[in-house]
Image 1 (tube, rainbow, N blue to C red):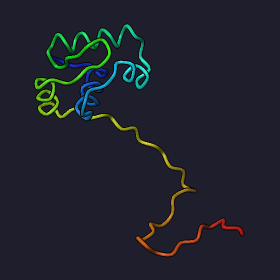
Image 2: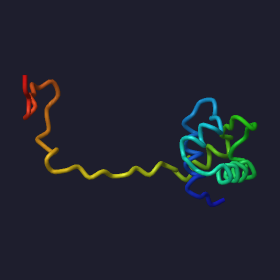
Image 3: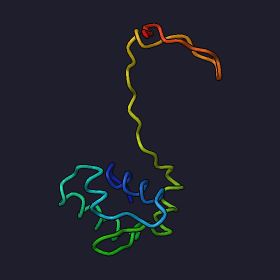
Image 4: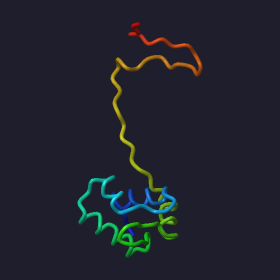
Length: 103
């Protein structure tokens, strides 16, 4: 089964959780409409990737195998750091005084 972006994210988060997640947690985390969230949950249940009740869902063995096989990961966003905030790397436990230090 080809998974869409939200399905991959939900499976990845369920894989990391120990006791499953509440559906409200998923709703508040991803800010998607309830319709899309419930359709996604139903699709994952139909594929036997997750199980659960109306409140909490958990990942199944098939869901774990799918994540391990496909190596699903969150996409991390890159941030541009302004040049003025870049400086030399500081060694561990070395003394450091900020440039604009005032008493």
